[in-house]
Image (cartoon, rainbow, N blue to C red; front, side, top):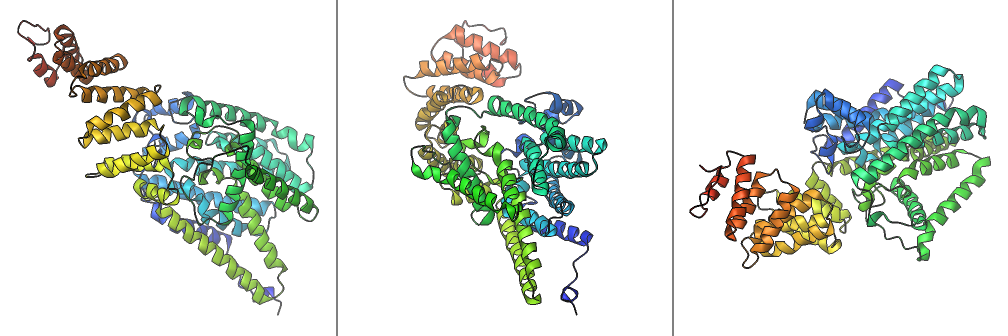
Length: 574
């Protein structure tokens, strides 16, 4: 009897697809009921955007949403119409999109006659480096954009075979949708050219490059828009982003190796990795880019035997270009790397590994060895699924995530600060919050928000005198932050009113708040009370009157007016 006939028959494709969806659902089960994390509340549609006019603003108003990704935020808008604030719906959509993307990887591999298509699909579906993108609601931008990205690639491959204008139009529309979901998909035209080279050994200017020129134009426009939004609306600017060209090149080399290592050995994944210090004078800093060049050269020499490894590596590296450090993105304040940055790029490595496993199985001559390869592959997928399940558990809620991040990266000041804010809102959690803020300031003394948060916590536990220096530091370190500075001035005024000999300072701070936010009745009241304590009655009367003008039923302002000296008058206090 032939060897092949004695092997178990493969499951039908619909059954494999169903199994993949079930596997993804099981692996991500710990995160399905998870709460909002970090910036989720800035992505889920805000109240002012929940109506039809909000949908218009999502498309036509820069700054209406945190990032200008209109397809993404239209999806969030629609999801909010369906289930409102329930987070389970968002998590299920992310899981479904991720599973769909894995199935699309299978279809692309089959269309390109790449062996091990379903292995590639399961690797994409279950690899733990993808947890951050799937378990974090904000990163629906990753899962949804990858679906559009892969659909555009499939449509392009169909166009490449038939050269039908309709296929081209569909492919271009899908690519535009991908860009409008997340700009990292701008690398797709280059990926398609690499695939052409892999298939044919050469790239034709007329046949291959010219049809992609509109794609490159769209990608460039989307990239410029995103770069502007990152810098001017999100805040990816300042001293933390001032790297020279050589430093950025060194960052890029280390970024590639980081993602290669975490893909091969995904056992110590962290929400926020340590921020590297890039020293252009240290010889060790050049090891990473030089190693990349050596690896590329080695794969180039192997191209006559197989172009696949080089093609996969080029796609992997090329897909990382937007997040290599050449362009500023806001998360670089915390780290140059993040698992969600490699979501699209890691697909190429999954396909390469799967093709290698399939080739090994094909070359194996004995049934026992074939079964060994099958068992090893199943074990690998089970191990990856288990790691994904464990990693997904970190995304149950924000406190769990930040504690896991601190355990993996004790120097991660962002996690310490965010954990402190969570603890400060828990009954009896203020002292623990203070400890977290103090850790932040030990790690990053110029963190204005940590100074402010620590000042608030100290004031709330009765240590107002210690809070003063932190509020002053917050104002000094981040003078352009309108809300933070206004609140710090108000709290300083509130504290210094009670401090002996510092009443004039309190008045100066409160006057600054009134200048910045003249329509807040409470600030006029507090300033009026400070002026009254300084025996500046006419000025106090003006502020108290203004408080009542802004809020006619303001009982506290009326009570303060009753304390005016005899003979004072007020139109608001008949």
